[in-house]
Length: 472
Image (tube, rainbow, N blue to C red; front, top):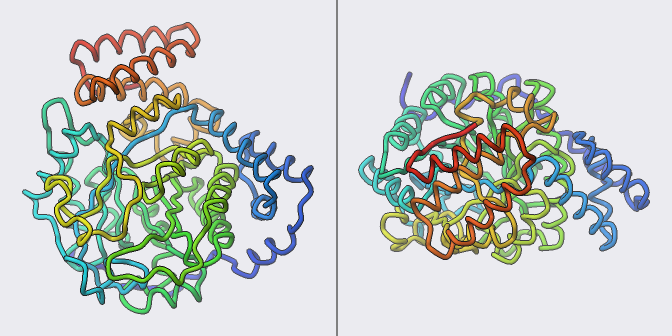
């Protein structure tokens, strides 16, 4: 295939985000009764994906009393579907060259203050070694939109990551956050063995989108909106959607995420594997003070409402948020978080030297991976680096076959225990290992007696004796 970015072609594409309908639902469902809100929460607890009218009703249930019922429903749903596991990953920025001019982004092409950098393959190897030696097993590679970062480059960098082995450690799952490709490009990237391909629409509101993306390939709303359709057509059945909360009304964006989910379900019989909802943050050379933003209270509400609306979709909460807020929101149904993150290009292996100048925005949670893991255990979560479903083909529709009947716990909790034990045996501090082993004991106590528990206990001993990469 030809090198470089694909030609943008929006011929025949139409938006599947009905803007007028969203605003109509938000207007029609004002002042909901507590009884109606509880009815919707129960429908979610019965593991039904909600309809737009139901989500709009929850959004309008904004009193502290009804919000608390929504929070409690989200907590309960998370326990029913995902248990108390939290999947951990790290972002790795490959390059910050970009030909787009997104007004909110530190990487925009007109920003003269950002230090441009693209990792060479030896530099990428150094980053992977640094991450592996801290205990990471799952990464998301992040690329600017630039001719240098075409499908071939993404493919080659993914293969390079998978090729690295350091001691007992390796990266077992590489997800991608990159510009939309054409079908041929997605097929090439898929052949590298990627996990999830993320494309965030940033804002689904077309007038806001046009204002915030004045030039570059990203200025074509429909090309980006249909990007994950092309990925699915190319065989990538694990896709992630997201919106940058705070560019416009968060209520509209949250509703649009549900409509995007419904579109994927109707067209491909499976919704997104993950939904992300990062809030806009300050960036070098960038004024973000004029955006409407999202308050902490509304941010907590939107996460809980998303959890109730899409019971089987993973929710990702990032280090953009403060430690205190992350610790609170994680209980509302978040299934994945990053930890020990540094988003400066090349920062993991250089200890963050001038990281800010090479970063897309500012992070708020600077805790190490080890500290995050210790605090998760103290809060009775089980940290997980599991990649079993991805590697056994339990993705897309196949994942839903396991997830919908509630079988996820059969695989995910045992695999979480085994990957967490690997971390403690190879990388953790003594303090974290002490707390972590108690958490594993609690997990075993919660498991019913039987063949599954016997097999897990046997594999725990194998890991302690030096075996690695055991999973169900």
